[in-house]
Length: 206
Image 1: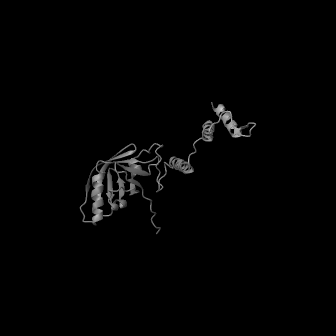
Image 2 (image 1 turned 90 degrees about the horizontal axis):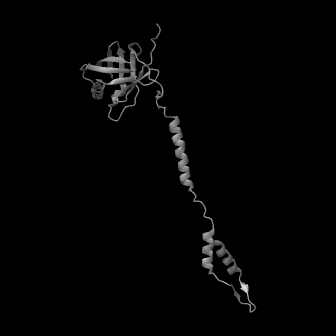
Image 3 (image 1 turned 45 degrees about the vertical axis):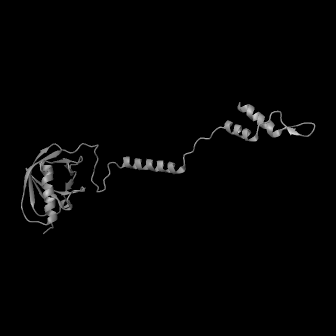
């Protein structure tokens, strides 16, 4: 059928002349139908995707690739490589002072950022600069299980009291776990607070 339409269209456009000079064809097809027939026989072009969505898809792919490459990155320089086994902890490896390393959640009192942990054999001391919180603890592999505790009752600044009350309620029966294979970072579960060993400050020479 398409070839027949094309043939008739050609005859219609060229026409035949009779002896009397009048232009006519053996079988006329109206021009509008001829054009429609030709259009129906032409191959349809593939739909093009607008350039805007293409750019968006490419940008999304780049962002996803970067996210995969940086899945172990942290903004504070602390390692968060979960592919390595956490380091085993001991009383000796924990001994000394540890400082809060974030991040603070939305419902955590701001003064918690000043928290220091001090590990001694069998006793964990916690302070934000005023009262002293003391807890028992047990080391089990890469975890430190915190037991019951006590707190002194010094009248402190309001923000310190808020932080101490929050810490006491959070630490009792909580667990600190080694966050990486070095044992230099501890994560408090379930709150997510992190602590790292405080830098050793050398005493000035006499």
